[in-house]
Amino acid sequence: MQQLSPGGVSYGEWEHGTWNVQPWHQGDSLYDLWHPHRAEEGSSEPDLGEAFSCAEAVAALHTTGWAHGDIQPAHLIIGEKGTALIDLALAHGGDIPTAYDFRYRGCLVHYESPEISRSVLDDGTATPTMEADVYALGASLFISATGLRHVAYPDDASRKDQRQAIADGPHRPVNVPGVLGKVIEAMLSHDPADRPTSHEVCRELSGGR
Image 1: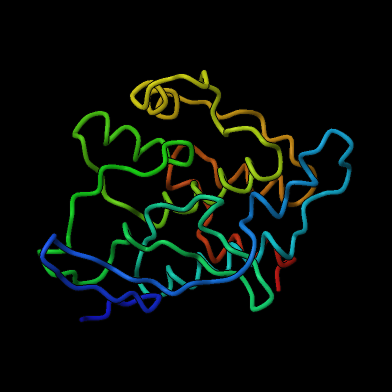
Image 2: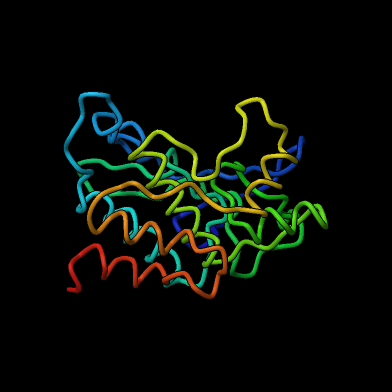
């Protein structure tokens, strides 16, 4: 058994192929935790502290030189001991033995960035990046706060059509109030170079501290 940084991921091989084991974190997903804000009678704004904790978890991973590659609300677990970013199966950044280094063919499409969707459409594969992680975090915050995917397409759209809609843009209007809405708007910039870094997102959500 070997261990892969970050996150205490252990991996190895058995008779049926490869395996990996990751730590268990107790808590609620971002999407479940923010359910009250999506209710028709809901009026309170999502908690900036909870949004900050999610951004902080992503920034901590980025500090190690890794991109997650599959950020979505279900992978942001908020509990009594803080917020954990789980499921590092598609993480990219450090040295990975060839036997465990599988081609990245995108993630859950609802949270893909335009450049990832475009690359998968064109080449069938892509490379996870920190900029794409920021976009995915913005899309995760948006759907958790509003119940809407960041880009509109039919519920029965194929993955190809979903990716085409994301690659072509634009995203839905960000109708989340306050600081959070402004930050999400910046995170969903179509051009990766125009997005804030995960650390800049943390600063904005923490009031510049």
